[in-house]
Length: 312
Image (cartoon, rainbow, N blue to C red; front, top):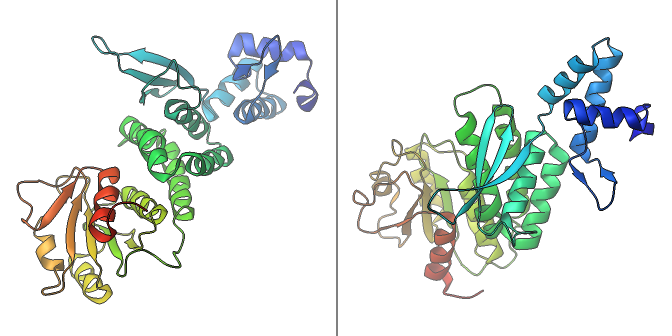
């Protein structure tokens, strides 16, 4: 690393000690392991120095451009459930950590790594982690244990703010791409007619439907996904023309989950199962023929069972 930057090793140690611009981790013994984000911060600092900034100014600039995350485990009072706290210059992020003592390669560690890469705006690392996690544990486990908790934590922290929101947008774009790649076109789906997946009008958060489409594809259940929310009349035409075996409509916000929408998209005599998914629906207001799911996992299990039975 010293040769790469053209500085002495002692200079690197000084920058680490004084300004916190050292490696993210150390190996056994006295070796220091510089990751991609560590190198990026040091290169930013070096460019600032070459432009005439003082060492302190250059270090501050590098950390502002690529915040260095500090990760710690916390446990709520009166609870044995641990959480993963990621401290950044903008504040804290809290992620679930089921078994921190045993979770060397589990969801909390993967969530920590993904959060750190996103906060550093390291798009290459984010893309690789998403692909590897989905390949290793499957779409559903990756969504529930890693992706959705990190997206929720970032969204809650910076909702309505301009500073820091770019991290959420970057991660969202990478997640969209990863979920699309994990949703192959099925040559021989187990269902004869597709499952139509969509958002209610005015609902802009369609990520859960991309996750559900990928989960169902893993189970060889074919879907027709509308990632962009359609107006009610367009959605009704889409249902009428595609003749789906089931319709799943997603609503996260309570102010957009209108139960009358199901009557508008109903296909009359055609037997199409209707499902509502997400926290934006009022269970008491839904028509009797509409089944409600709280999350992607329950939706995937139930839709598969209703359409093609248990098992894969």
